Image (cartoon, rainbow, N blue to C red; front, side, top):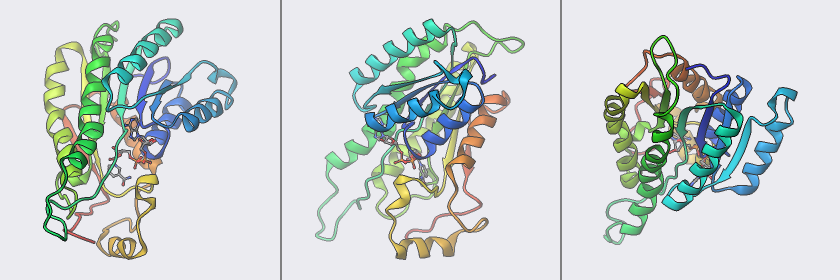
Length: 269
Ligand SMILES: NC(=O)c1ccc[n+]([C@@H]2O[C@H](COP(=O)([O-])OP(=O)(O)OC[C@H]3O[C@@H](n4cnc5c(N)ncnc54)[C@H](O)[C@@H]3O)[C@@H](O)[C@H]2O)c1
């Protein structure tokens, strides 16, 4: 998929991994629909990118969205499709990067089971929010004029986690959500193959973002001792660089790629 002249939808685009994708794809000539809960950051980022280069004008738009609310996605999708019609830059792909973590052991210190609310909160954003966003955008991508020579129409890049495979203590809901995204990768690729739409999932280990910035010193020290190479968390630009490769390389399909510097997370840090 060529990036210039196509529109990419990035949820969670205001921060961390999503924001790095927004910046890179915009820099490479793509049009970007930024979806996020954080309206002030979103408007600010869109304005900054609009002013970054002369030819940037009209290539970025922010939509305030809560991906756990289907009407909120519906409203944004309506706006995105109108915008795409006006620019002529067809939808090229979706990067559903909105996500949250909420630690909680299945039994807490008082032997109380984890609340269903905390499980629902994580699943509704990470899993249901991802599938709902894809579900609502895919009919529009499937109507794209296919691109020669392979008749490609679009690409989905899902964001899982190494917690899909090595969930740590307290990651019940988070691992459930990320494991499910890894599982549906092949299903989406198979379901959408006849439409010329690919699906690839990235499973990052620790990346330096707002999500991980709150980590205490003890955990960080523990982490450094288990990292293989390099001995640091990934930076969001390294994540975005893999997203670019996935978008541009049509042979990548139906697979989950670990982006983890060889690290296998232990039970606890
Ligand atoms: N940082 C890591 O180490 C790491 C590792 C593996 C996977 N991930 C995954 O990468 C994705 C991005 O995480 P990040 O580290 O960039 O986190 P981040 O906190 O920096 O960014 C997440 C963004 O998602 C937005 N968001 C949260 N809930 C939302 C909702 N309901 N609707 C719309 N937007 C919402 C936030 O406002 C924020 O802008 C997440 O799915 C996360 O699980 C992160």
